[in-house]
Image (cartoon, rainbow, N blue to C red; front, side, top):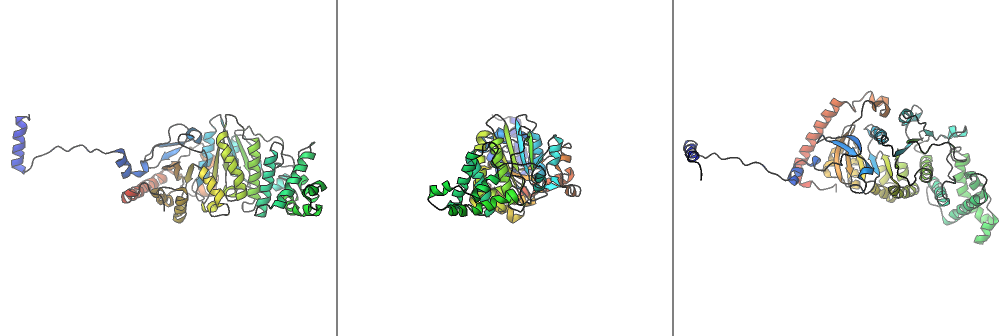
Length: 469
């Protein structure tokens, strides 16, 4: 029963103002409704175990990522694709990520450093800070007792050696080996491995046997010896480039003794190789297979294999096939492959579209820095990004990227500490003249990005689950 005083008060108020005051009920909402109103904060975090990357732009929460911690429950594969145009912070992200991973004692990292400045690789400062000398693969230095990697190293299985030889030849020729050339190579490789036991077989042994095949190989096929020699001539000419051509010195001898495969960080400096020549994919194939058989072991260590200019791998069908096997085995052996590419169009529109798609499918983590609008739309279609993320990519400022971790999409600002700054910003001309990581500039950019995102979400709230058509 209502209090008499309340009844009188309500009657007086109604008489005086013509209405009765009512109590406003509290506003209630569901999680789903809140997510629809503010999409960028809808995705849950990745947990609190691993390496800190920075913070989420819209929520302000710390962003922590580690493929080894997330693998299984949140990640089907530990591999990572990093995309974006130059000058937006990819290199800084890679280097700080590696430095922070190496604070764990059970981590090892190999870097294929294909970019350089001042005559050395981009990772030179990081390696020097850790007391490590990069492994410089340089044709000129190799002639003067430089570093050599032997494709016929006994640590590589005979099957692996033959696959690697085929890849080298196919990359150089631009097409696959026909049956006759493949037979000539197989026979020469088998003969060299069977007869040379007092030392490591080398490429010049294969070239010699291709030019002068054994009569027994012709008899086995019931053909003339001149036919077998003709079948192997093109193969011999291609391999001769590594023995006596512009790539001589790096692969035509026994593997250099003393390469420390137990070091926490191993850097292969490829910066002296022309990035636009066929030498680069050949080089990456040899290094990749050699590492597969010498570095990756079934122990408890977690390994990271980071490849700069990875389009050389993904865009060649022959090299990509070698790395597909490595990536598949990597999950069982604790390997996280990190591919750094400027444009997705570099790899999906080439001759290796099928192989590229297979590798991209295995990369459950994708980090996309600023791209032009048309490139962002193409990237969104291939990777299946949410529409709001695709719209934001062209507006991103340096140091900020869209992260897609198996469907968990966030906009993340990468944070660099003062101690890391001198090691990761190696391009002085860019960093001295830009405000890439200036806190005030970044905060202003973030606020502007928040406003754009909020406006976009309000306009397209019904498209929360759609992807780019």
